[in-house]
Image (tube, rainbow, N blue to C red; front, side, top):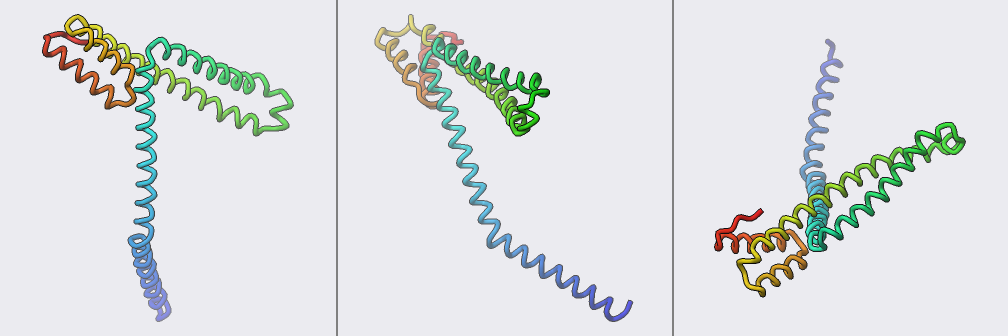
Amino acid sequence: MGKTGYKKISLGILGSLAVGILGSALWEWMFSPLFSSIFMAINNFLISVSERYSNNLYRLISSGVEYMHVQQNNILIINCTLLLLSVVFLLIDPVSSILKKKPHYAICLMLISPILAISNYSSVSRYSLASDLSISCYSNIEIVAPYISELEYKTLHSRYYQIESKEDYDSLMAYIEEIASSKDIALK
């Protein structure tokens, strides 16, 4: 190798080191704090959304099982109707001129169909969980009812209908469990 070969290799190594040092410095001083704050903001947003979703679930519990079934059926009917219409348009309408002239309709329908299917599954599982929690809590209130005064019974019912969050639900269930353990009663 000639003198220019060593010179090119040396400059390449020095250039790589300079880019590495500059990149590391930029990452440590600029990008790392920026990305940390962005990821922290995203994380806080997701936590607040999940807390609102969870609290909404517990608010749903206090609305009563009968109301939940009506609301669940309404959501399912609407979602299934929209899902069926989108599938019908995708399966029956390929020969039609609408999808040939405007293929973005087909793309929209293909995007909407899985979203509606996921929404159906989500609402069914959400209402099912809320129904199970509601029945469990209400059943436990009725189980301890003969062992408490009329005022305590009405207080339990009142607390049941005032559930707004997981903490409210857990507090009510802890109180019911405390009553059951003091009276040696088995809960569901």
